[in-house]
Image 1: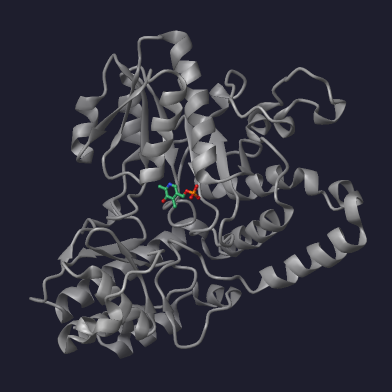
Image 2: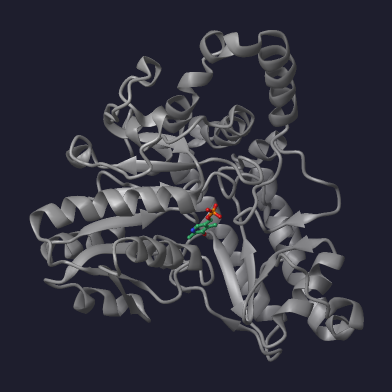
Amino acid sequence: MISRDDCLKRDAADPLAPLREQFSLPAGVIYLDGNSLGPLPRATPERLAAVIRGEWGADLIKSWNSAGWIDLPADVGDQIAPLVGAGAGELIAADSTSVNLFKVLAAALRIVGEADPARCEIVSERDNFPTDLYIVQGLSELVGGRYTLRLVDSADEIPAALGPKTALLMLTQVNYRTGALHDMAALSAAAHTAGALTVWDLAHSAGALPVALNEDGADFAIGCGYKYLNGGPGAPAFVWVAPRHVDRFRQPLSGWMGHARPFDFVPGYEAGEGVARYLCGTPSILAMSALECGVETLLAAEPYGGMVALRAKSLALTELFIERVEARCAGKGLTLVTPREAARRGSQVSFAFDSAWPVCQALIARGVIGDFRAPDILRFGFAPLYIRFTDVWDAAEALAAVLETGEWLEARFAERSAVT
Ligand SMILES: *Cc1c(COP(=O)(O)O)cnc(C)c1O
């Protein structure tokens, strides 16, 4: 049986341990919510102060050229690219995940529609992150209800749902609630066999595990900047398109930043080169600078084995958490909803529990920050850049204590906040 001392030894022997120093983490807190909002990199406040005082304050509008502001979406995109198996020039940082999804859906549907206008179904999962489903609904409404969502209740049902009516297979690679990981290669191949294209949401996989967009045959992808990429609240998101589609797609938010020559100021729109046409309006330079600092915290892992080494640690952390919670909380009513098989899970562990909200609040009061996802999920993210084996041990002990003492029944933990 493993002990806390063994965890201390694993931390001491962990070659990735120094990477934690990149973050400004409050004392006395075990932060298991980096899958929802990554923590503050130590470099970010200084970088932002330099951008604000020097580039904006002193150099003013000249900084679009002199500080390279105009190239930031492509530069930050090139930094993210190797983390998700994309090549240089294939990925761009812009807007939010939801907005980018609208753009890629429209672009992908246009390509499919040119080949076969009868394809009208978008296959996805009922428990996909709601914004992904809502964006499909809004887009379809705009074109007279032309597209319908065909929702499955389990990944096993996906191959059978694909057919001659399928336009797109739209999936989130790691489920936000359960942490279940899809097989991108197999599902992309199945979609292509059915004559459809794929749109992948990497919100819970970019920066959490190695993603192989090109190798796995994906068509379009989007991802989030403020989760495992540590870009800060509301950070810009990103968009990727497979090189085979890059010159034949159009996206409908055809703003001037995506024009081939924005500073010609001509009245007609002409799409820019490749992925640059995914830009719409002026990027937030402050937010883009913070995202760059966040991405750099992951690139700092390259000398230690990069995403492959981070993945190995992440699986060791999640495996230990499952083992400790099952050992310490047996018979307390928790049900593991994350796949037990390592190859099938992302970097989080979730348990269903009838009163998940107050338990989550009681844990936060003890300094263990996870989160609650309606209706009954306790979710714990294990970002391998900064979570230690002792954190895993202590978090499981805190959960056991909250359940054993019944402190979660206290009235102060019952009140629901606006953001959960
Ligand atoms: C977090 C998340 C989003 C967030 O979208 P925003 O536009 O940034 O609010 C979208 N999709 C998935 C799957 C997510 O997990």
